[in-house]
Length: 126
Image 1 (tube, rainbow, N blue to C red):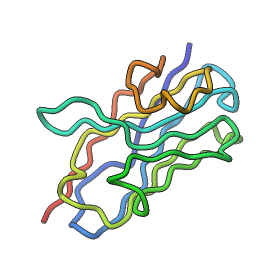
Image 2 (tube, one colour; image 1 turned 90 degrees about the vertical axis):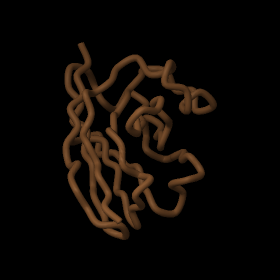
Image 3 (tube, rainbow, N blue to C red; image 1 turned 180 degrees about the horizontal axis):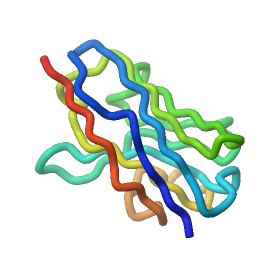
Image 4 (cartoon, one colour; image 1 turned 30 degrees about the horizontal axis):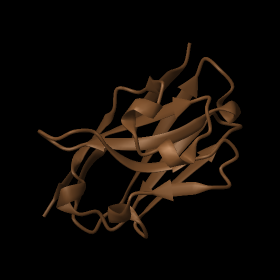
């Protein structure tokens, strides 16, 4: 059974940076697509970024392009999200997801991902 555990969240000033990690266990991580979603207070979960098995292709929602970078280390079974130039509107619970199926056109759908972590909170002060 796949388990995902996020870490790295915290409180940061606007313009600052954070790096989130998602530790994957239970299966071979290199065979799973992975992604990051976030859920702002009182809102639905929204897609942030996705990455293919190999890490060779990445996908982002428009609001984070140029500021966030998704990456993975298959040898360490870990997914990352480097977040720079953070804004108050980036405040949310951040969740990682994983799935055996590689289907990038559907990465933006929360229903696509079969496994989820519990999340890590990111707060950005203005």
